[in-house]
Amino acid sequence: MKLLIIEDEKELSGNIAAYMSSENYVCEQAFSYDEALTKVCLYDYDCVLLDLMLPGGNGLDILRAIREKKNPVGVIIVSAKDSVDDKVKGLEIGADDYLAKPFHLPELSMRIYAIIRRKMFAVNNLLSSNRVTIDLLSKSVTANGQPVVLTRTEYELLLFFISNRNKVVSKGSMAEHLSGDMADMLENHDFVYTHIKNLKAKLAEAGVKDCIKNVYGTGYKWVEP
Amino acid sequence: MTRRTSLSDRMLTQFVVCIALLLLLATPLFYLLTKHYYAEDMIDVIEAVKQGLPIPDIDLKEDIMQGIMIQFAIIVGVLGIAIVLTLRFISRRLWRPFDETLRQIEAFRLEKGVLPVLPESDVAEFARLNRTLTTLMDNSLKSYRMQKEFTENASHELQTPLAVFQSRLDLLLQLPELTKRQADMMQSLYATASRLSHLNRNLLLLAKIDNSQYDRKEELDVITFIKELRPSLDILSNGVSIEEEFLVGSLNVTANRTLFESLVNNLVVNAIRHNRPEGEIKLRVTRRSLIISNTSSEPALDPRLLFNRFYRPSEKTKGNGLGLAIVKSICDYHGWQVAYHYEEGQHFFTVTF
Image 1 (cartoon, rainbow over the protein chains, first blue to last red):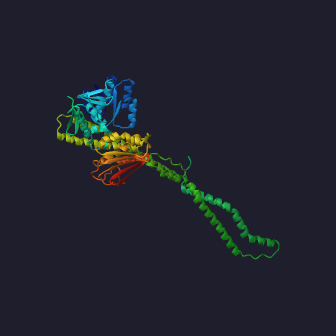
Image 2 (cartoon, one colour):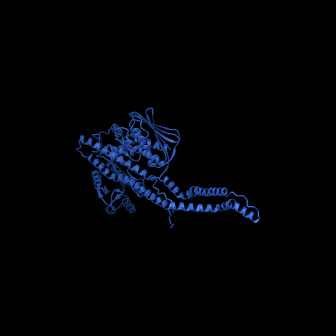
Image 3 (spheres, rainbow over the protein chains, first blue to last red):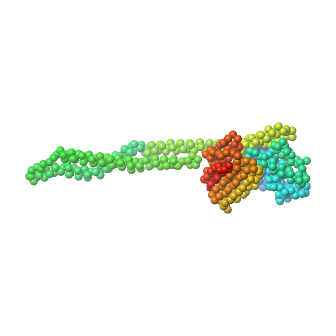
């Protein structure tokens, strides 16, 4: 999978590349408007991360250039300017998703994963890992062939885990993923723990054990051998 | 361009004109006076001489006294009327541009960002006053706008370093050799990053409300909105029971969706945050208001200070002290009322639409 990270802040771009590279992505970086425009015109990518405020131009113009060429690449706008207008405009021009800074890398990773999955495996709606299979269309889960009934929160958590397999995801990133802005207002993210505990118990009941590893209470990891 | 004259010159001119006019009008009076008092005796004497009659007895002294008194009274009367007229009516007309200026600056609000157009005046002092006032208001508006933009820009600029900080932590967490102690330290760094980004988002939201950037409004049903919010609330509630009570079928308000969401989120998250374990939250919708109440072990709060930015009643207070300020700002923006009261161990927040 090829990923293009268009972001002028070198360190942020590097962090994203480091996180994504270990997930079988080949990451390329562009730090300015011109560089980005050249790259999207010359090469094919599976997904493009697009910052809107770039030295040399507006990211939305790059998006326009991509869509004018009928290039079906997935585009996620990553912007420091969390404005409704920008979001609406970006999605209108043809962005697939919009993420406001600051964000958690697992969240970004999950969004990239979701877009690539949608674009590439349009036919296949099954996602599996560790003998757990998720049917994305009916939102149902089976473990070891047995159906597992999950609450909406547990389902979202499971999807988040599998999208970030073999990665430690922090409690905060899960809290934010589950409840958006509201988690932001709570300092205490312990509510996540309750839901993980329930999810673990339900999976264990179906015979899938030890796939969610606790990392000193700071984060959790979906271990896939 | 008309030539500007000073206020005192104008007053003097008008006063003189007024007196001249009145004196002109009073001329018949003087004529009659002269004819019947001064000249009366002389006419009698002339008549008597013509007809050869003895000259009548006349008291010149008394006549002169009377004449002078009457003349004096008329002059004083004319002057008096002239003064009253100039002060009351003419000067009212003269001061009208000043009244207009006053009215304009009384209606001037810095937050609205509209510079009033002061009337043109051909009175030098008023023209100068208007010029000075316009410059003053224009400068205030400019610096107010700059200050507002600064807050917004500063918040935007902070987002990227925060993203760097947070993503670096996410990477650090992946290290296989991480120890328990390091993980604990990271936990506190995560908490700090989260507080920072929350604070920054709140500041940005406040700045944007102040800058009136949420002008897109739509019709929303409070009850539908709360029902949609319920799943997220249940995720966060962590043992606190949430009860709904709708006294009406629907309650429509015209609001900006983002802001309304923020308003309700802030109030309910507050209700969860300050609750006690196994406590409860009640969401009531009446004909005109939304009432959110929660149990808490914390004492009553000061309703006068509660909605101030960065108000914290005690050092134990959670949150960044902006939540309720945002609620107040959003209510003000939409012209709603928000009130707080404490009753039998429960904190009540009422938003009246």
